[in-house]
Amino acid sequence: MTSLPSSPIDAVKLDKLAEVAVKIGLGLERGQDLVMTAPIAAAPFVRLITKHAYQSGAGLVTTIFSDEESTLARYAHAPDESFDRAADWLYEGMAKAYAGNAARLAVVGDNPLMLAAQDPAKVARANKAQSLAYRPALEKIANFEINWNLVPYPSLAWAKVMFPEDGDDAAVEKLAKAIFAASRVDRDDPVEAWKAHNAELHRRSAWLNGERFAALHFTGPGTDLTVGLADEHEWHGGASQARNGITCNPNIPTEEVFTTPHALKVEGHVCSTKPLSHQGTLIDDIQVRFEGGRIVEAKASKGEEVLLKVLDTDEGARRLGEVALVPHSSPISASGILFYNTLFDENASCHIALGQCYSKCFLNGATLSEDEIKARGGNASLIHIDWMIGSDKIDIDGLRDDGSRVPVMREGEWA
Image (cartoon, rainbow, N blue to C red; front, side):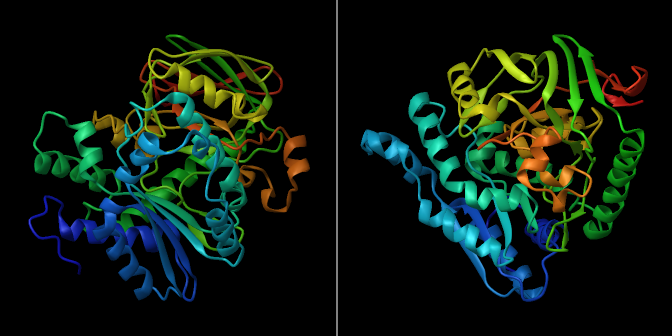
């Protein structure tokens, strides 16, 4: 095992998380290549994942590191035209790897407020350029053609955003413990714990699929929102099979069951219940109004300029690509911690996502073309951004075609 001298991170649990990422998150198969991205601060964790991947028979593990200081150097010193460019060649290479059945793993651990002090216009331009360049690779992921996974690492930069009053080691230790608990690696047998958790998420998904609701109606403080569901939509949660036949858990941790809204059938208004950390900017108190499935009014108390630029990314950016249900009593919500990271915060609360839908959230989704997905109400966009709208004050009803209602959630809990 890779040693972590004088580290506040429990080395045994970190190794268990690496094992869970490979065996449960990816379901990596013998001979399969792995493409991994990670912040450079997560190098000790990357080495553990690489070890478990090769022990599981990985063909070749390739890691692409990012560095916060290098990213900030671009904003401080790069010429203006730099912000309309991205490394197309890199993403084309990743898309080629995925087309060859390589698995995808992203280690999450960047400073969530890294770009908070930068020019929002430059941030938006850089994000759009990256989204355009990344599209060939993202389509392989969004269409669930390969097994993929996101998994967290407790970096110092992230920990200090969450626990600014603590010393460095204390902050990292707190974040590490929270990550290990949410990821179920503080159990004696994390792999078995994940199997049981996946079974419960499958049970919830099966009930929703049996109901075949036409829409969901969210009500609560600042919220009266009807989310029409796509034709022939399908609910998913926990582990599921990618088109390459491999069963994986795309997110670790995860508490959600989710499906595809109808891009043209969302009406009403909704406000966020937790801040959204997007590409280094904190966006808080989001309030939007939908007409005909499209956001026609939007504001936020913090980060509004970034939010509005995100909404103008393309035509699909103002429409929904996902709706997800999470009980308020989920372990991440119960922790009382705001992670400033969508991977965690979305699993504390019911949420919606702007932008691209998942093709797997349709009956026989693996066989559908882009036009067929669109005809069923699926949205297309360069972005997919989740933000939280659930709390212990939100009620949700399922609406049937005949107008009858079925309680789905009351005060944030399954009814």
